[in-house]
Image (cartoon, rainbow, N blue to C red):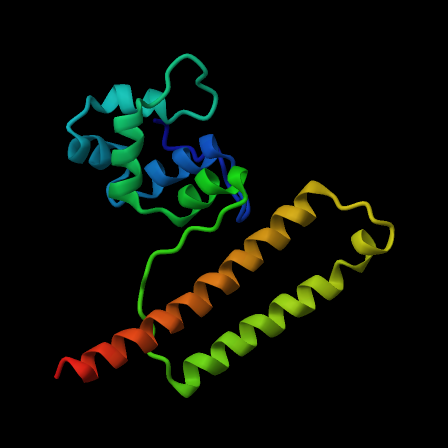
Length: 162
């Protein structure tokens, strides 16, 4: 793949093809390192991750490997967004006073963002970029809250198990 980034400043919401491209480029060592770990020809993987490639595509097994190795949140978002689903990786966050305040701040920011979108709500004509941005912020809030819940559970279980 070229050293020129073909997807600069794409924003937080990517299509599946864009997310695969970005996950490969941003992998530690780039697509070359990813191909090595997948035990696949470097040139073949680069072609399958190209933004404008229509004839070559990852096999289901290769796609699964890219997801497993990169664990790229943008790729996970792009995979589940069409189904209206939210992914969640259980990463326990200590359920401390500070963590709860951080969620409060995140909810505040999300609320301010939603309030700033009054034009879309007023005329009932939401633009695609507004909806995608709103959905992304909602997923971020959900993940943050679920992380604190997982942290509280882990803390409880650690205390019970000694």
